[in-house]
Amino acid sequence: MNLERVPNEEKLGLCRKYYLGGFAFLPFLWLVNVVWFFREAFVKPAYTEQLQIKTYVKRSALGLLLWVAVLTTWITIYQHYRAQWGEVGDYISFTIPLGIP
Image (cartoon, rainbow, N blue to C red; front, side, top):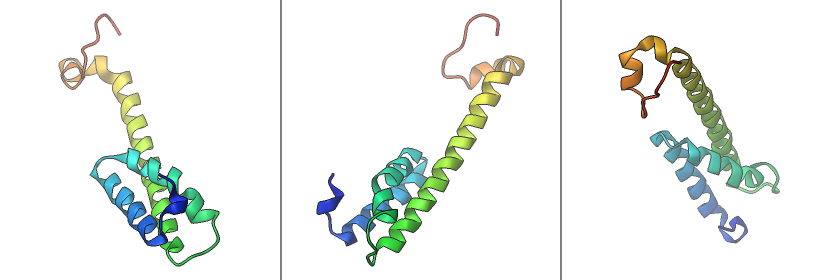
């Protein structure tokens, strides 16, 4: 989608939809929101809707960073302690690793 051809009101609506969609456990939408609307929020000359877009982009970036931190922490803990958790570690695994850790 070329944001240059979209009116500012529609840009704001689209930015808001991606921001709210990220709360449905879809942090990828926050990444898309930050990438697509960063230039609109911080580089373009000022216009009426820009302040709201800037807010959504900042909050999307913060939510994305939080998701990345939580997911990285969980992956690290799980890989480190899965063998010690025994059957529970295998039960919550998508695939059951074979062999000795």
